[in-house]
Length: 61
Image: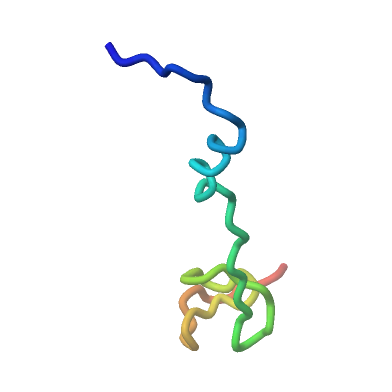
């Protein structure tokens, strides 16, 4: 069975894990109400997605 001869250094370990970092969220803005929206999601503020009304606005009591 293969066993490492030397301990893996912090630098080498960090180089191996360099692509595992957390990427920031890509935030877009709604064309209709200018509120921040995640890509490929319906705007929670106005209910529009790609300039079409997908979710009708709820009536307030």
